[in-house]
Length: 139
Image 1 (cartoon, helix red, strand yellow):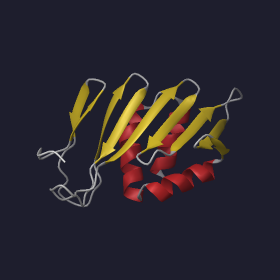
Image 2 (cartoon, helix red, strand yellow; image 1 turned 135 degrees about the vertical axis):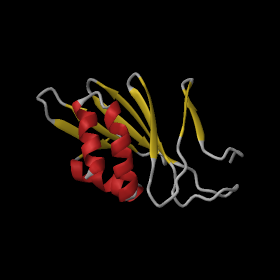
Image 3 (cartoon, helix red, strand yellow; image 1 turned 30 degrees about the vertical axis):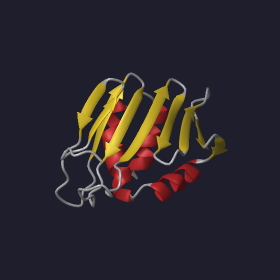
């Protein structure tokens, strides 16, 4: 871990820093570039030093057909818009349903993290599928 007092991230030549967390609230920052967005959240229980846990990151790629979200642990969640206007869900490339997507997110992100990611991701939403992911995270 660097000696900076606040985490600092650089993505595709763009940079942002997250505000310090003074309480148990999860705070997220987002950087977006075209159809990509990176949401990163501070761990409210982080302590300075070399053994501090890493911040949560949530990478999304969106296009007209849908959105793919990649969690820190490499799990991918896809929400795709079908030609009939319905939504199709997948986890790690395997067709799933909305319940399976919710279960994966619940198993990997706390309720507070999901709400904070949803809030940060919402302004970057370009598609109906991303809106659905924001809604799933925010529930």
